[in-house]
Amino acid sequence: MKSSVLLLGVCVLLASGCHQHPLTDYRPLDHAGMWSSGLEQLKMLNVSDSEVAQLVRVKQAKLSDDACVALVASAHENKHPFVSGESTASLAGAGYSESQILEMARADQLDAISGDAVALRLIGLSDNFVDFVLRQRLQARRTLSTPEIARLKNVGLTEKQIVDRINQGMTDAQADHEVAKREAARNHAGTGFTRVRGRRPH
Image (cartoon, rainbow, N blue to C red; front, side):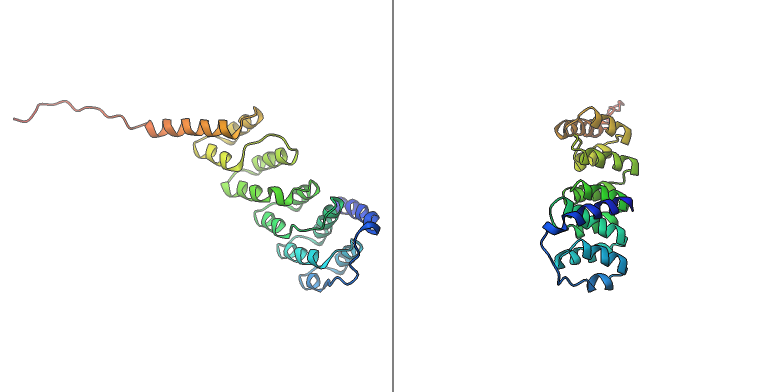
């Protein structure tokens, strides 16, 4: 991957200023199925035992060796160790691609938005809609919270209608108000009755 190579180069340049971990045990990653080339790149990145443990979780989620190296390089570029093994595994389990996960890692947002990202998948939204919402969040643009998106969907709005509302700057409070109005209208529908007129019994 070009991205992993670039990130690797950046972190190698910074390695001289990082804490050294000469006694890191890489055997757990070897047992998890990482190839020797991947292990050598991680050694160049000077990973710690705790990072190895995080990467074992990533490998268990079936991500590639290149992705593992890129995740660590991204974390180091953002001036902290890689601690997002569980978040990464959750994203992979929810169907996110390596490229999407690495985009979150480069933005240093893996732990911050993984829960919401997984919830968006569970709602049953399309890939295009999920990509739109995640891009809004990664770029720090206003968007609706996942619970409000789910509520709007449940009261009958289409994805296009929800996207339009997000683009118009709808807030969660405004979404809550619209949901309440639609629920009230739905609950009121069909509650009327027609009086049956006839002769009274004697």
